[in-house]
Length: 582
Ligand code: PEP
Ligand code: MG
Image 1 (spheres, helix red, strand yellow):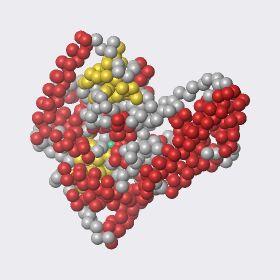
Image 2: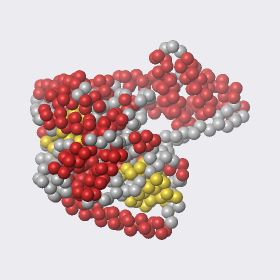
Image 3: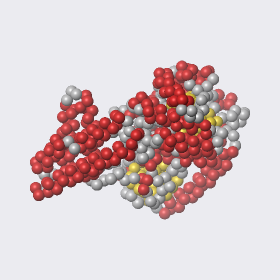
């Protein structure tokens, strides 16, 4: 038995058998071959090239019209590279010279070609190195017969263990069968943690090396409340955990009983508690947990399915389903936040040095205006089915906002011309998740209908801390004075201009942030449905004047640790809150 300590990602306790998911890592074998085997190795290579070529052609077919010209060209160039006679010649020569297996020879040839490209002064040629890596990985996969395993095909209940998981892995997996998640990488605000919370799957992330410490079928306990994983637990430990699991479930059920009560402070201030969702299925959970609406529908999870980007009609159907299910409650659809870790590996062949500062969210729309406009059409068409709002992610300044508004206008014009019904004056807002947007929120407030503060990104960009990197997770501080000041500034500027301001980052679901945020004047929160009951309980025991005093105290402090200590003490004294720091 061994206990590993990680980062709390999604609450709950589960005991189950591990399923090790390491499909993206290929170790390349190296062994000697005889003269008589050279021909067979060469044929193996040609077969792998043929299979890889068919794979790319099928990919192009599968994506049909959703593929841009640029991407089409890229895939065509990969087909040409795969079948380049010079590479084939080099492989044959090296097979004769080195007498080693073809996987190893292929890596040598690719490396030499990359060195040659890097040595040129030609930027275009230098950029081709990424393509070389990509195609070599593709051929290698075929040589090693390692087809991509799919988590969608899981047949028995498992605890999923991985080095890292992409959001597309989690979206595509068979959620009925994944009872728990444990990963080497990740943090509280990485998208894996957010998705695990959404799907109510207990999860611990940031475990460093669990994927090297266990084998598939090992028994594990995932304690998502403490952030611990116990490997091959003994009988006594399992018995104790079963008791704790029962107690926890009882506690959760009690909290759920609050779903009909309003989130009103002791002195009568009404606070809206809305839900963050990633898929239409989660609406059930939002309603069950008493959400006042959907404050953030992360639409990108419709796009990062293994089946590729959705058509306008598929989007329209998904958005309408959510709107109809929420009836008279508002639903805020955030337009595609593609990029960072939210990618489709087959679509995204380019490797960016710093993807979180790169081609993400609204920046992606510049390259693919049709994808954005198609989404806006689907959203506008769905607007007749309920109370719809739309917001844009990652806005960094007024020019970006103006460009998007003009694109929305052109979509509206086209819909009017075609006499397609939509709500003319839907509320359009922006996320405040880039420091420059927070600092210019007075300007932005004049041009938009509402703000939604995305603290997950706002904190990472303000403090220069990658939100998904467990090595620097200790620096990711929601209570850093710099972060609190920015939040205060955004709330004040929104109020001054008279536009609504909400928070949809994970900070909105942090029990220790609630009183501070309410005291700063925030009256609308959007959070994981599972967190709504606890946040509501806290709001119902807050008094506004006391929360304002807490804000004064906190704003006068210089250090994060001091602020955190003060808040914990305040909560213990005023709210009798002692459920352990989350
Ligand atoms: C945020 O950044 O706070 C946010 C809600 O967006 P996401 O987590 O999807 O980046
Ligand atoms: Mg964000």
